[in-house]
Length: 199
Image: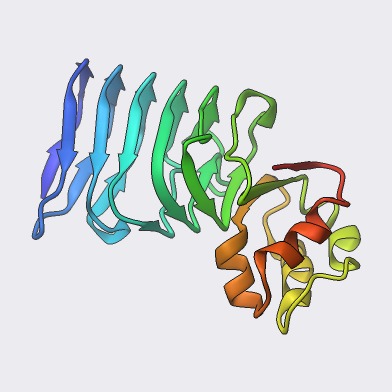
């Protein structure tokens, strides 16, 4: 295991690319104005009680199903592809994580949730990604929409199962279309009629 903890690192480039080690960031680690290059899968990365402030986070391979809920992210910029990631504060650990003033406009997100945060401080990616705001509170409205494809109805129904603290979820039209057995254009036709969507 390679550990970074109990220190503040400023203006450094940290490259996480070992083929054999697990990277542990935390406890009491602060990265400030750093570039964090992540080239490992989620199972090889632990971030716990860590503050990332004004950092650039470069994802070099698709980071799947990673939970950032034990990280405090402030003013960070994300690059690369993230799938099924959670950002913000988990209902189980409300004080452990947060996200504010972060920029995902150059990232590719799909199935990524944002929990207990102010989405007005975040920049989301544009089409072919799109972000649905307040999906849990709007789950009935969203499930009633004519989502296209064989599994389109799963999209709307799924929002009811998300934690109540989910304030936004971002999808990539290509991946969602592939799952549903439809086209990005057909999904766009539904999304364009929706209020409360960032695209």
